[in-house]
Image (cartoon, rainbow, N blue to C red; front, top):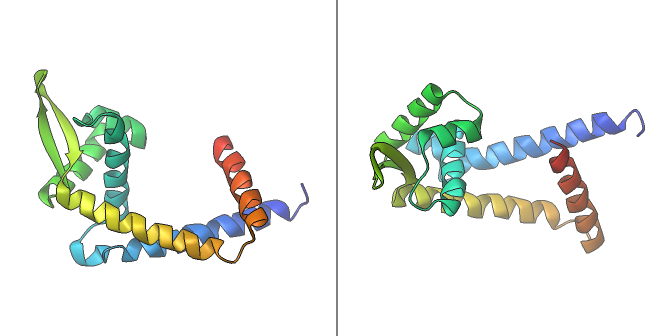
Length: 147
């Protein structure tokens, strides 16, 4: 790897991160509905995790997935419950346990955000040939697997 390769990669990752962050900032005008990036990421993770567990996930599972302390995640969840983006549902098998799921309102926000991010991805890929797209996606897959 040439000495400039890490600098080029760092600049590309930084540019992509900033572009996606700006896109997420404007998703459904997050500022106007008072949702932070962290809250949005939490909702997206709950959505992904509940695909495998449709009845909901525990706070512990969410905290482990986020690599954050349960108390921190509990505060995030509580703020999203108050905004009607997440809900706590009593576990039918263990009344002491609570499971977290998205509300329909939270799902709508995520659906809108996915459309915007996919639009940004399409915009980024439009200038590439099919071979360039394949090479870039292959490289990103390898990089992601190392992270």
